[in-house]
Every structure is written in structure tokens, then in C-alpha cells.
Length: 153
Image (cartoon, rainbow, N blue to C red; front, side, top):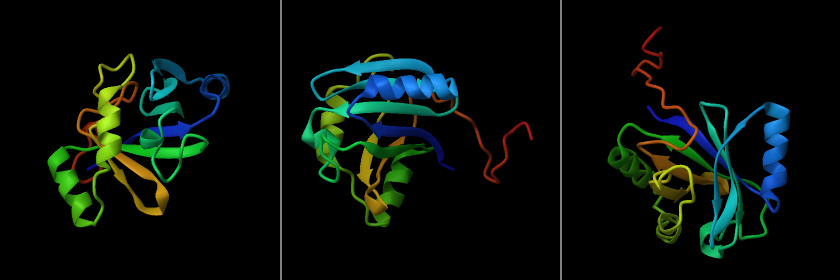
């Protein structure tokens, strides 16, 4: 079962937007990125990670959005098996965004060892989807059984 673990918000003022989420909701800063392709802040509540990003690269921003876009950009699902999730997405006629995947792998920022994004897809309704088998900085991995219950339940 996939778990929602990551939300990315495009912002023209990522530090100001991140301060809003820190001060209003008490999220903790768990990383940042300052590079040629994007700048921003990673926040977390301990379970789910939020990236507040200002895209500097049209390819990375995605043709659906562009670098001037502000708002929900993409969501990330942690999956048990990356190959299986990729096959299910492609069976649903959703192909990986090869150009975005290539740019993202070239510059992943600080604080997460460059491991966050595994594959990116153009999902329905213009929302991009990331899948990862190992998760994102600040997002706690939770094991869920096949029936949807936590192992302790």
C-alpha cells in the first residue's frame, strides 16, 4: 500500500511561505535547497514532509506550471516496491517524466543525501506525482499491513 508522505508547493517566496507553516502549524525545518534549478525549504510534522520550492529551471518546474507558478506542485507517495508502482502507473497510461527525473537527480539539495525522489510522473488533473521506495527527509516511514491497519493495532 502506498502512503502519502510528501507535498511540494511552488512559491515565489519560499522562505516567507515556510515561515508561515512554521509559525502557524509548528512544522520543523528539516532541510533546504539552494541550487541552480531550485531554492527552498523542507518542513515536516514528523510524518509528512512539505517542500516549499522556487523553481529556477523550466524543465524542473514542468511544462504544466513554469517557473512563475505558485501553488500545489506535486505529491509524493512512498511505495513498497518501486518497480511494481512504476508498472501500475504505466498500465494506467501514465509515463515517467524523463526530463524532470533527469534534472532532479542532478541536484537534490542538502539534508537528505540526494535520495528523495525516485521517479516523477504527470498525473491526472495536472498534478505531478513522485514515487519513492525509501521516502523523503522529515517524513517518517510507517508500516501498514495489507488490511490498512498499523501493526500495533
